[in-house]
Length: 185
Image 1 (cartoon, one colour):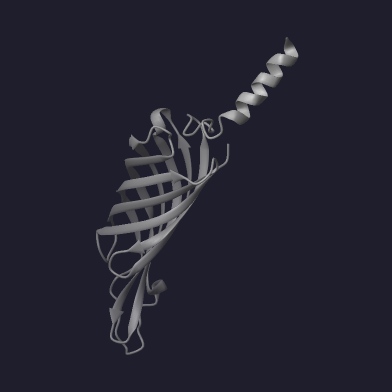
Image 2: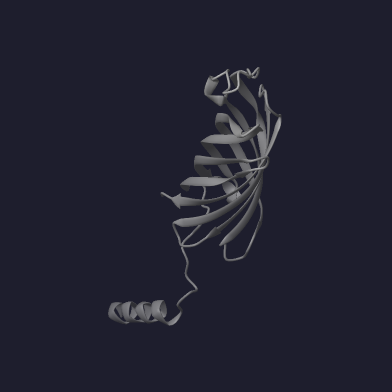
């Protein structure tokens, strides 16, 4: 009887391929994600984050980000660089039945530091930059689409709007990015 059960189980495993998949977005499942993208108004950013799923595919997100915008002045571009840390929560509001694609919306709290032209006040033509370095505070709203490429690799596409006080060169930053998440447990 035991031998028959083992053979029958083995036959069923191979007879029904594709119906079995790994469990995804389990509570306490963790991932590391790397994202890069563009910032409206001539800029780019990169982000490294740690995420942990909660119930229903929702997730906590903690990370660090570097953002750089370029401001034109005569023949040069003056860099405005921001270093921020964030913590937030994203709500899963749409997913397919096989749990391979998810759409989430969420909010984050941001804190960080900004420097303009790496604190070099004097430009090549003798002009002086009045904007100084500053501490940043605020938040972000994120719309994110994620799809599983494999059981441990996830493709991310996101759209973010950051609202940061303390910045001397703009309050809002719109970002569009692509990334990969690596499920680590």
